[in-house]
Length: 484
Ligand code: NAP
Image (cartoon, rainbow, N blue to C red; front, top):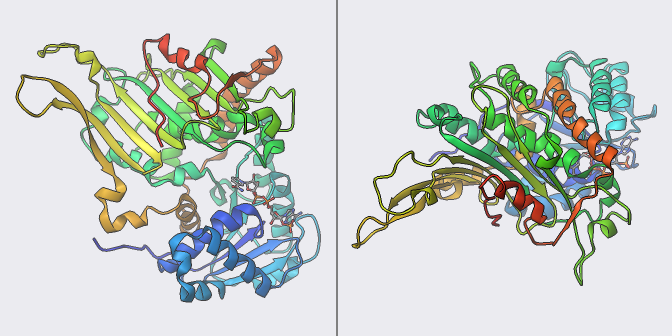
């Protein structure tokens, strides 16, 4: 297969927070890989901005080290790295201050796409947006990219939207949810809307239930202070899991266009039913002889914040009425694994002997590890001895199926940044989507707070608290195994 890189217009990309963890671990290594792939036009420039008093040479040194650490195998390409570094500049700027802005204004080229990545705390978004305009750096075509967390409830998300709207219109604002940049997530749409096979089955006549799992093996050590004010519901469910839920549940958009897709996602969020308290399980990881508990990691011995949440969610519309969506996410779980599983209903009648209900078609969409999609189908076990049935996966692990192209299963950030330059907002959250998600999540969190709900302890390396297993057992169903 021939690799195909779609060129983008030339650009100036300014990364506020250009010395921070996200910029060094994800954004710049991602840009480097796009550069090596030939996707950075000859005049395209990246400017790092932060308060530290660095010159461009020392910024390049810093980024060279980051790429060596986080850039993957491509980082060994010394010539490529040297060429990429010539595209980088740095300007010392305090978002709340006056210095540096004129210098940045002078660095901007005319007639190129201008994009500003706000890789800083959300409390700085307003100051950055205002100064970009005040100094004539942003124009009507400029784009801004903002990171999560986008608010911590409906009121703060609304205020953040208003702050940005004072200087940029919705078509200029790119709210990142990096889950949407994953190859498999986009493939979910390709599978649903590019094949005749699935869409007729994609409803309550054929689907028994859907499971969405995002399991991490890491704890909150190192960012416990931040996490303890957030918890799994705010940190993972309100954004990532809900975005996945929307893509799996939405109606086919009339076209693959940013607003058409986002309109359909918004309808899903608005159709979510309030969740009853007994349909949610919260957990906190316990200590072991050698590892700290959540409360120790968070340095808060009385913390009621959840590091795990599992819930049963219903969508009140014609397509999904009666089909439960089971969501779960947690830290310090058995394996690092993210998966969406569409579990189809039993056959109405079997012509074979034995319990046919043991055999089910399951479409599983793996986000990590080994991005790919497989469909579990029932076949005859090979060999003599009658009609014994077994389940086998029709596997489409991208690394196997796509051969040389597998290397192009690029990091979500790379794809999303290039989409910003292209002006394609399809994989970014619109302001009304984010607010609608908070509107659904807020009463759940308020309920916990009102009841002083105490999360259940669970063992590290497990699948979460036993109550989460019971959530499904009560319905005669079981979670899929969390496999790395
Ligand atoms: P970080 O490591 O703390 O970096 C913050 C960056 O902002 C630094 O470059 C810092 O440099 C700069 N900065 C701080 N105050 C500033 C000011 N007043 N004016 C200009 N620059 C300022 O944070 P991070 O982990 O990179 O996260 C950045 C944003 O991305 C946050 O909103 C975070 O929630 C979000 N995010 C991060 C990750 C991740 O994996 N790290 C994942 C998802 C979302 P100076 O101190 O020199 O100014």
